[in-house]
Image 1 (cartoon, rainbow, N blue to C red):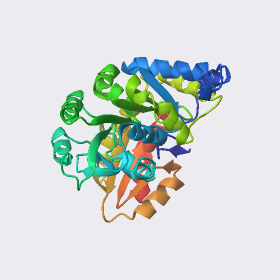
Image 2: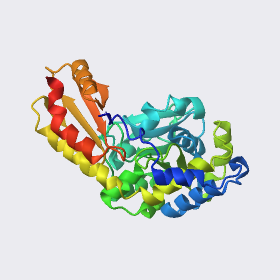
Image 3: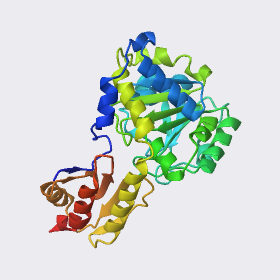
Length: 341
């Protein structure tokens, strides 16, 4: 048996999605003539209650475009120390926008209004970069799939409004947060200037992220996407996969959350596991006891046909997804303890 739980990006298109890909109507998206892309963008703009949306090949590019739209060179954004825009986008914040990051020490990748307020540079102190943007990640990747309550995000919004700061959500796994918290996506649309939603993680599409915002902030998004090399032609085949995922594979995310919770409970019962982080969605973070050799542990899992992520220093990650079947789940629950033998 082969069980790949390194990430929810490893999924393959379902039969229904493959049918949608084959039957997609396409055109040249650089000319905005691809009907499938236009349909996807319209769907997500309406989904979040915003005016405009633009399809990007990747989540990193969409986030980088959003940062570019919100900032000018030599300015600064605020994000958590574990934020994806800082840790996992190749230094693109500085390379693409000439912007630095003020890192705050949140909890499981989540920040608070108090942390944001304290991190804002005085506007009249010219030795410091001008603070212009706050980025939050929902759910948090390094934070183990933690997701914000709407009330927390509203409080941060009030700080942004008070100081005239842009407010961007890196919503790579926002679908998981919406399902887990039973939230109304339009509530996010009311708070954030820009939102990204990734289609190639839990939703299971092969590629694509959509950047959503109001008309004014998005008016230069096409130009920025072009500068970053993101203009695509008959990409409606992939957009159709994303739209199929949104309409048919959104609510099933709760199945991934249930499996992740059950894995967390199983890990808690094992003596060689030192700690398991709270499981909110489809990511499980756990730590091995110091006496366990991580390399040996991972090698044993691989022999059993189980692949997970080693994040270093005894920190491990499991991510459930739509290709992780009930049969695989039962096998893992019954055999995971054998990885230390």
